[in-house]
Length: 179
Figure 1 (cartoon, rainbow, N blue to C red):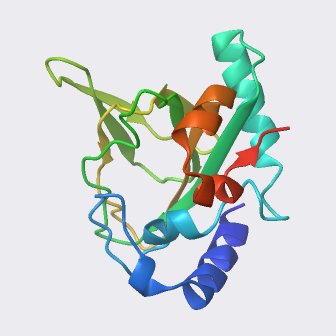
Figure 2: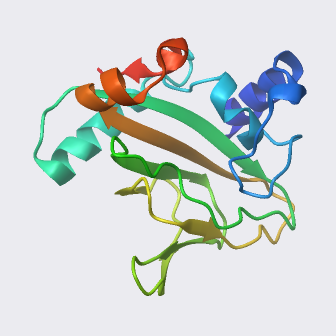
Figure 3: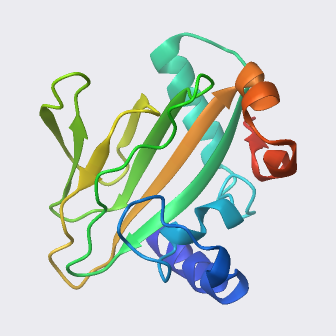
């Protein structure tokens, strides 16, 4: 999976507009794959669309809810010294769940700030681990410390109501119904 993401990174960075790049307040900058998250969706790319089924299954196991879900999904590739700064994914009334999948995460952690007191919860990354959290939860990572890329996959999910009422009509084709 790591090699697939690195190949996708190259093509996305070559094919998307840097002028439209926004890194989601992660601090990774406009040259990062993360900054193109609104310009591609891993749930729609042939080599990675299977991730939608995995994520949907995890959500159903966690929530015991079989509602229809729509998602956007991207990859984060960090090189030595890079880290994702404190950010959240969505705070609107239709925000639902977000998550990440650790792909290649040697000796790194993701940190979540608890609501109200913003105490820090450390989650050690393990390749293959899927973490779900409310979209409004602030989180960040420590820096990649070696020469091997730190690769994670991020995603945001909404239910049917969130898709219909919370997603701008111009952006609906960016979101994928999870199968």
